[in-house]
Length: 427
Image 1 (tube, one colour):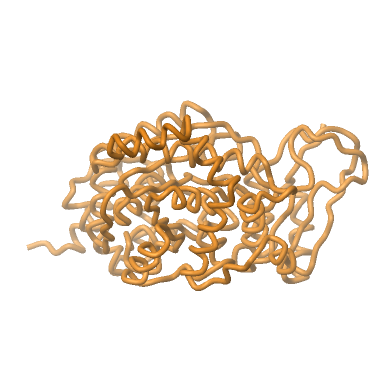
Image 2 (cartoon, one colour):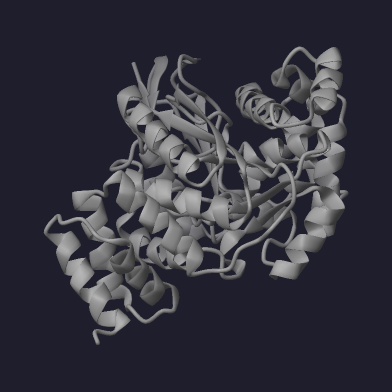
């Protein structure tokens, strides 16, 4: 009888030449990877085969199912909300705003977040600035019971463990196929018990998804997968030419999310609008599954989920909920955006405009590269703050953006790298 490892090896060989795999073959691969029996080389071959050849819709379903089945699962009752972005846009940390808004509405939203894959920081890297993100299964149940929500690292226990191994081998090359993104996101949602999910799909020339048509294809695959797993889903396809916020890096992004929750005068309005859009869509999706009496009660007060979300943010209820979540995750609920100002990297450099003109483009890929060179996400205080954004007029000598790092070496290396990785184009 052929053992599981042999089945997995032969399946990888099949996929490398473009053949379709069965559930048995895919389960064998996921099980070997999940239990660290495959090794980095063979795991990388499998990741590369998916990137090059792609997967059929049925294979995507098999991959997701096997990824979930080879790990642990959480079980919550009722409507379980979640939101996830396919990523690729640094400086757009909406999760830290969406989760407390939706939780303050009374819905359960246990957020399983990732660490950085292709961006300078993942949501888990950012939340770690405010509170612990690594918990056991029972601890997560207790946190959610108390606060209706959480923002934790999905890799802290065995939720879709094969995905974390695949992420590890993909990081050096900084690539993710659309199919891998879909499987990764859906597996984590299913394993965390989510049944009402909004997927944020930004597109742009320097993002993961380049064109609207590609975004629509990705959305169709998400919808197909959601139907297979009986999940109610909504997708938001939209163009993004630049970060919604101005800060890139764990502390800088956390600071901006807190400014939105605090309704500070200097909060990033574009980030607020984006978070409210996603929160409104998620509230509408959840409300549609509520009993009629609850729907009618909500509609008497608010014309839409967006209006409801706006009220929860502007009234301070979302901020109070975030403080509660921070507290139950072991953080300091008295933290403010002003206190985070003091924690930004001590070494900094203003980058000045070499000429007069208008900001024509902000390159998200180069922004990511420079932020990583500065030390993000390992150095929480490292990153970039954009003083100017697209369409802004600048004069020679104006500050375009500021580089921050916790080490002088990283700062100098990043400054030198700007010649090869220009962040802004001025015309």
